[in-house]
Length: 156
Image 1: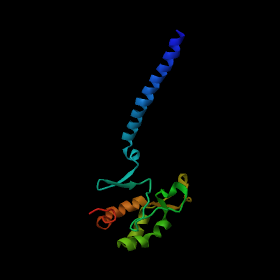
Image 2 (image 1 turned 135 degrees about the vertical axis):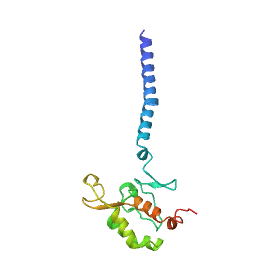
Image 3 (image 1 turned 90 degrees about the vertical axis):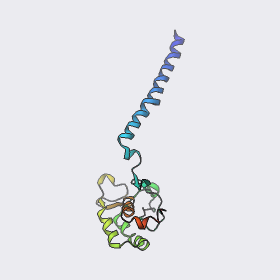
Image 4 (image 1 turned 45 degrees about the horizontal axis):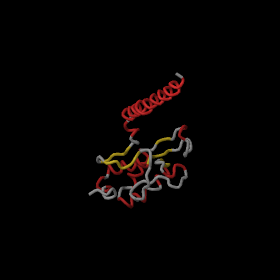
């Protein structure tokens, strides 16, 4: 009787955990991923049915036609897509020279897509500072000027 208890209880616990962690938990997580598809997929930027990046993570951009994130900060290893308005404005000449897009359009684009930093997001920026997401700016440039950016994206 005691031997059965020492054998059956651990086996029952094992089977219970196996079902719970091997079936129930993955199904719950899958349900969340289906319910919040954009978040679960990493907030991808999709252009012409091709994923070119993410709104939340800035990849390494080494092309003068695009806005660059701030690689000089040690936080997040430079993958934070947010920069200040002044950092974005300082890139206008480079982008305009590389693409031929007017400096006025680029300036308006920056101001139109900037927003005031909220107090709960004060990791890198000061309260009241205006910031922009370089990935959003780059997406708008690609969609607005497909002929210019097709050569930078390797399209024909």
